[in-house]
Length: 58
Image 1 (cartoon, rainbow, N blue to C red):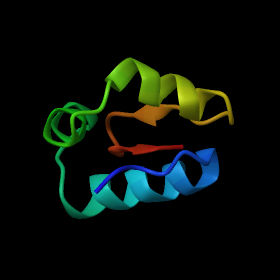
Image 2 (image 1 turned 45 degrees about the vertical axis):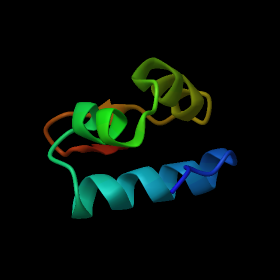
Image 3 (image 1 turned 90 degrees about the vertical axis):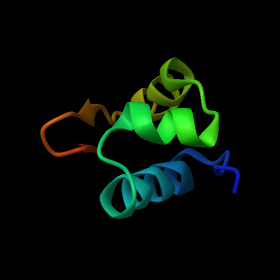
Image 4 (image 1 turned 120 degrees about the vertical axis):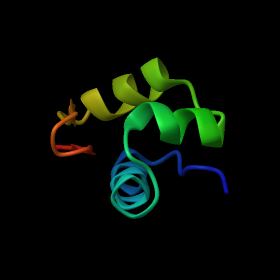
């Protein structure tokens, strides 16, 4: 499954996947073939940053 391009939909999809399937962002990116830096930048553009302790973008 590809991740959505829309930033808000991307946020929702990534946080759901992190909650339900992945222990951290690195695992998600590796499994889905996503570039971690690009994903972080897309969500940073809408003022969300990855919180390692919470394992989600906040």
